[in-house]
Image 1: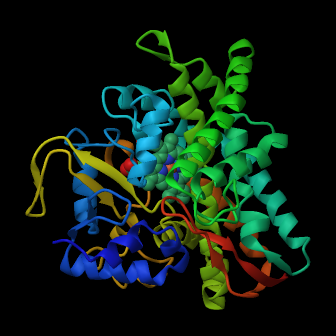
Image 2: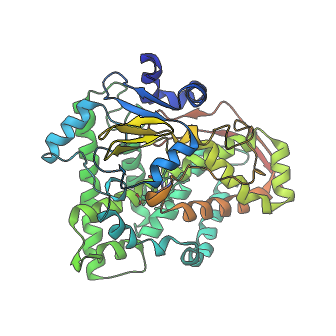
Length: 424
Ligand code: HEM
């Protein structure tokens, strides 16, 4: 089935996730009536919109049959894709990181850091992360009862954690935040480089190229420093990594830094800010979590499902096949609608209700299969620690105005979460 032009346009419209309800309503209808639906938004090529949890997992599980890197793994207007090919001399990617790779390269590059990101290895970071969390809680409490939780706390705490993990000095964090927001928020006039709401495809490709060049300039210096003077950080592992006995390629090292520096905080910031909206709306939930802190990991998991900050990835079929009885042809492009999978009525009871007690809560917000989020355990740990530190301090909490959301079609979440609170 092919969905209407209006529906297709909504899926590609960065403002859809800022508006929130219309896209969730569309996905609910698609899950019910057309779980694999063809869409051709104006300016974009044709792709399948995959809205059911089981189909998203089935596609992600078969990573040889559905490639991540044959085309751009994130949605892009056709004209932008063309400009990128012109800029790169034929490649659909400006950045070559894990998300753009398939095997054998993907496995080899992922193995360089996979054990570093496992819970056992991350344990050693927990005390330091708690110190960072405390400093942000103190910052919030110092506002004397009113702050914008997104702009004052949620944007900066995960940034600080991941930059320390990578080895980026604190003084450079504002630059990293700006570059990430320019990369992911290219369609939001508050966040993009030109402050413009309607960019042409050429402008948007050129801006993405310029942002990536800035990242390269920055990280090539860090890489050189870590080769000369190794430290106990992720940058040292990447800078000195070897693939098949040879030093990791420049593009691949830069891709690693960029994905860690970008995927590592906007996602977690969006989830943290979104969790605060739900908490500020429910004094009862605040009390339940304060009375029983063992509910905090469930609260974190539910906030990840609720926000699903990564709104999609795309795959390309490498052969003719079938998903849920639907014929998929070789080279078909498939849009994995994670927020839809995470509200699939076949998997979640009352999916439109926020419930920290939800169990099991096996969502697809971190993806699935070979590419499943490398930073998932770090993200969970840093959010759990923040709430463990903040919740006991709060006596009352409420929204102090309407939250607003970013306009972006790949990674996004709340832009502003004004809250009023009192402390114990
Ligand atoms: C990949 C979500 C936090 C690093 C991904 C993917 C998703 C995702 C959906 C793609 C998975 C797939 O294709 O199946 C999230 C969410 C986060 C989060 C929801 C927070 C709530 C982090 C953090 C890091 C990180 C803190 C740390 C550096 C990565 C990397 C990949 C990735 C390196 C690429 C993995 C691969 O392709 O093999 N993430 N992420 N993410 N994420 Fe995260």
